[in-house]
Image (cartoon, rainbow over all chains, first blue to last red):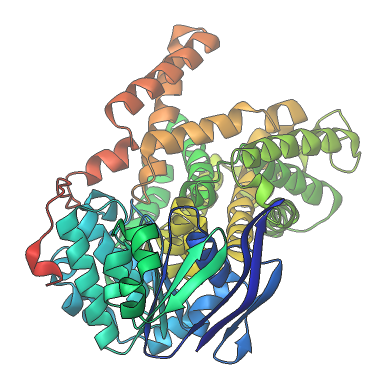
Length: 234
Length: 333
């Protein structure tokens, strides 16, 4: 469904991605792990068209979308849960969700807000609450809802557990599992390697702008190299 | 336009009833002072509402709103002087020219992300100086001496009575109010506020930010240009120093801050307060002192009501939970 072929992204002189190859199969959960500054967020931004790439290609459903503008992503069926949630804080929960339906293609695919309210009943109970006044976990639900309301074929999550209490992190991952059970393909960029790889079909380890390792979630979790370098294991 | 909220018809009804009541009652029973004062309030209301449509919603503060108003005033004067067209035609031309100016400025300014932040304000301020200088030197518009409008409107419907100016201004408020309501209840308006909060995320959701910013800036400028038309007739004599005075956009911004942008009617309240305050302070005899008092009261209001009057009011009508770090179990499990 998604192929990155030798993707290069530079910020001025500094290269953030130095030729990344990655593929995501339809219906799978793929995680992109690595330490802070490895290039995970840059990859997500490039995929969403928010950061121009200087080399390589992004191919989605057979189309080269490398240079398509960010505003085209909803038409392609790619939705983002951005790092830090980035909700429209002064707007109500309902308006945040409705903005997920701004694109006409998103509205055409969507089955409406009730689907999101079923997934997150708490949002259905408080549609008028201003998003900025919700707790971190609730805000993450709004961010997920805003992305999912358009019925995307690929859901991209950038550090969904960042800044959340452990119990909330549990819940966010449980939600991701439920979403994938509905058949949505997920690309998950996450520092919390253990949790991310546990629920992934496939994982890529990113370091200094390059893929240094890849394999199934289990393979990576049991790999000595990964345990030593990232999980603090023996 | 796609409506977000089916209950959006109610504010339109309230607006229409209010304007209708005003343009029927005030000229009929009001003193000439009341009509003149009312006219000024309505024109300021148009400016505050039209400024808020773009700057309030998108968060791009423009310091050049007076330019569109001023251009509208000068275009109206020119059309009435040089042609035999009616006032209504002159007003439409004024709106079109002001909108065209906003289009040119908007297309240029928003094409570069460099102007995304505070620089936008500086660019609009620069635009004000450029247009002001241009008008002073274009003899067709002014040429530096000021122009008389009164001799071209005597004997016409619009020039014969302040009541008629009041009615035109009332209808313009209805138009500006309708656009403001649309901006607060449609998908278009929600997208503008998304631009204000997080432009990059708005784009990832498919909001064509460049097009929306340019078009809304055009709408905002055109509305201010329309308001310039009755103003030209009211003044009777227009000159650059008065029409393009920099305190006009500053007063407009002050009104919107005071009234708040949480609700569409915030700028109307702001305009009412500032216009009434200025009028009340005329009695103290010093214009400078009056300005200082208006400024200080703005500071005082912001201290008490950081989101303006409309934000203060909606605190009691919008449900806001106290933020907590607790997660609600029923949510996702």
